[in-house]
Length: 79
Image 1 (tube, helix red, strand yellow):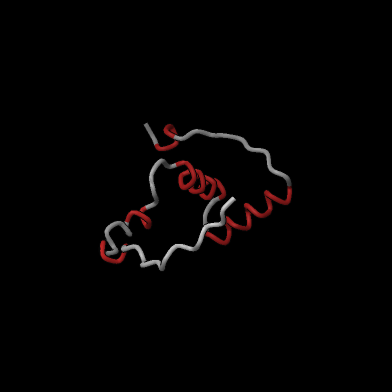
Image 2 (tube, one colour):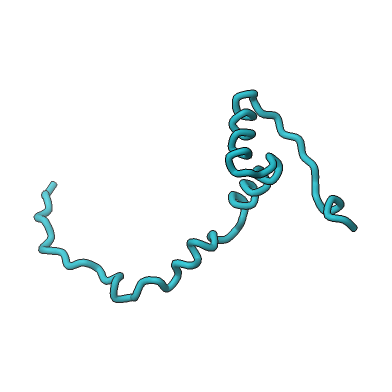
């Protein structure tokens, strides 16, 4: 089984201006249009946080999360 056997083909309909922007973005990213679209789908349909967010886990000490001290409460208005 080759790599092409494991891929699906889909058709999408885009307005001319949107297609032009997609093609320009693919050129800028130096990717084929299909790879750029696949990358977008991968990023926007995953069910977990991106790796760069996960890398932040544990990066702050618990002491840095203490609640700030507040002054006395403001007087309440009676009804």
